[in-house]
Length: 454
Image (cartoon, rainbow, N blue to C red):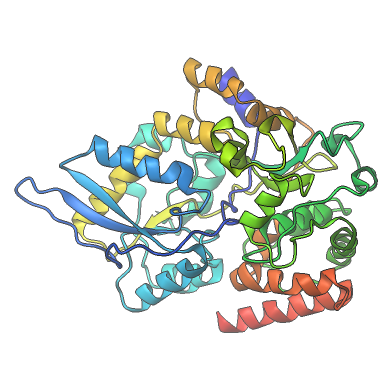
């Protein structure tokens, strides 16, 4: 119990976020669509799984080896074949397959891969496309007990468990190079004015391409630092935010513009996630906003990503000024199973879900990407290994009983705004073509367009 409580108080995350900040590479040549499951007479059930957690996507570091471990464990019985889909193309692919009634058996949940909540509700749930996982949960109590309560509640719609709930929450904070940026106290212990002043002329690894992930995280922290900011964002997680002219967002956007104009790394305009990460790991920027999964980039094994004298030992992790962490466990979990899947495909998908949420896999995920499994009682071996990772331990310890948690700006934006339009407008905010008021007005217009298209 002490271990559970300590873990729960130590870290909370933004699921959303989920790895949504880093796009994958090009598709491979494996079969598309739902794949073909084989069954009968001892034949192996084989199924294609389209996913963006492949290629150069940061999530592939853990996910692909996990799929391989699953295939090895069930060799001759089950086999998942990964079809790599670039993150920017995943949502459109899934929508087209849904129209053709050819959904893959396993689909990423809304809030990931660009799949918007409105489409999921209006198309998937309204048409009963999601397979009910209630029986799976009840028949696997050792798996169900690892699921986070808030996630179970959110994934239960009209008495049906329509998505696999979360077992792990991953913190989204920030990292800084302690040889370049040397604050007098922890960032979490500063107020917003102190933080901005402390930055001085140091550069921040912003991005404007893809979904402008690192930039959106800082904007989230700026909004949350306004009076009532985290409560303001929280109320729009379900139904999304369509008006960005509120004073809290306008004030935060004004600060963001000042930081973009004074502290943006040289490659900010047009920068994708990989460019922002490179700016930080080449000492072209002293700060970057990102989740716990980036910690693996600071390990000696990832030294091929470093340049200009950068080393992982120079990195300090923290959360945001005002003692704020970005966290939103109220999401539709990680995956759902399409009702159109065959019985064999459903069997394989459920086996993979049970494998992924086993004690061993949960602990490995936390060790690889960071975060906390609040319902799991950790093994002694896990606790020993976790303590060996300075960055992740530091990030966990930065959170305390007074930490405030906020949903991110990406959690409240319609998917098309979060994934594309927000980033498209940022260069104009940075060069002054758009004032903060005009930027917020145009965001509002783009959100209205997204609402009309839903």
